[in-house]
Length: 160
Image (spheres, one colour):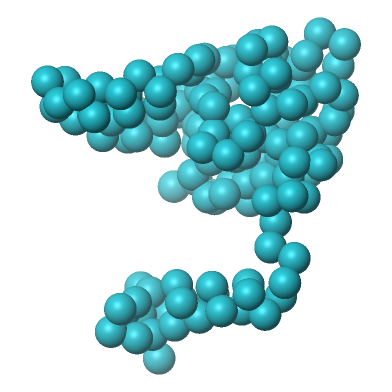
């Protein structure tokens, strides 16, 4: 079993629009397809990078939607829009297509954020705009999603 993708890393794009995947992120990639990743547009103005194995699970879920349902087709069309398979080179670098860089507003710098089964790639200023600044609001969200209540049962392994 592989480690979870985690951490927050400041990176620079080279003049050709490539990023070097941080060593800790690369080390956490599953051994199967270790150098093969899938890049998609995020729901927010960022890019999402999936290890191939994690992407296959999501791809299957989206493809299982009924193609005869207009709403499902619309979702599939937008979800897969711009999806790109990328391969890490010998130094762990991968290219970001121009259309993807424009979507996420990436020019010279990026922040890569590990989120368990995926990483997000953000323009640093945009990333900061999407972070919760009010610690009390953040605490309330933690309580809402993580407290042991009838609405949110205890997480496996955390029950006392």
